[in-house]
Length: 303
Image 1 (cartoon, rainbow, N blue to C red):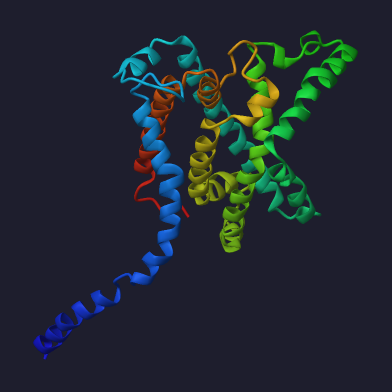
Image 2: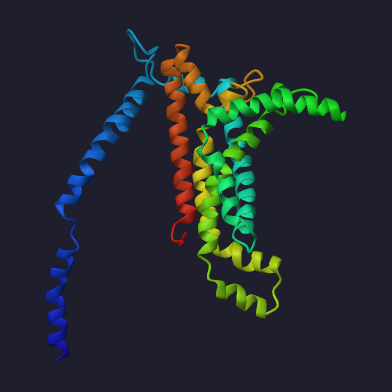
C-alpha cells in the first residue's frame, strides 16, 4: 500500500513541476521593460566604461589611454576629497534620518490627537523638489539665521554656515534629512502598525514600562524596516546632487563637492574620459557596498 502511494507521488512530481514553470506570456510582458532598461541604462553604461580607457573629451577623435585615467584618479586630491565627503555625509545623514523618523513614527502611532493630520504635515517635504528646498534653505542660512544670530548676540550664527568650510556640511545634512525623513517615516509607520497590540498588552500585564516596551518589543520587531531604511537611505545619499548644488554648489572651495557633482563638473569641463573612469570606480564601489548589505541581511526575514 505504501509502495503504491509512493509510486503515485513519484509519478505526480513531474506534473507538479511542469505546473510551476513560468508561462511564456510573462516573458513577453517583461520584454518591453528589459529592452528599455538595456537601451537607457546598460548600453550607455558599457559605452561609458569603454571610453574611460581613452582620452576622449566627449566629442571628436580619441585614442586609447589604457589605465592612465584610473591611475591618475587615485592620486587626485579633489577626487579623494569628494569620496571622503560623500561617504561621511551619507553615514551621518542615514543616522540622523533614521533616529528622527523612528521617534516620529513611534509618536504618530501612539494614542494622540490629530495624528492623521500630523502624518500629512510631516510627509509634505517628501513631495517638494529638492532644488526648491535647497534654495529656500539657502536664503534662511544666508540671511534669516545670521540676522537672528546678530539680534541674539550669538557670534557664530552671525555668519552663514554655508560660507564656513568646516560647518557647511552640517547645513547640507540638515536640509537633506528634512526632505528624507518623511520617506523613512512612512516605512517605520508601516512596521509599527503591523505589530500586534496583544504583545504590548501582555508586556503591560508583566509590568513593563513604555521605555522597556520600546527597547524589548518595538525595536526588535521593526529591525527589518530599519535595514530597509538604511539601505535605501545610504543608496540615495551616495548620489546626492541637487540639494548640494542649491545650497553650496560644492563650496566653499570644493569642501562639499560630492562624487556626482565632481563627475558632472568634469563632463562639462572636457574631462569626459577621466570622469567616466571616476564614475566607473564609483559604480564598482556601490556594487561592493550593495553586495555587503545583501550578505549582512541574507537569511533574515526583513519584513
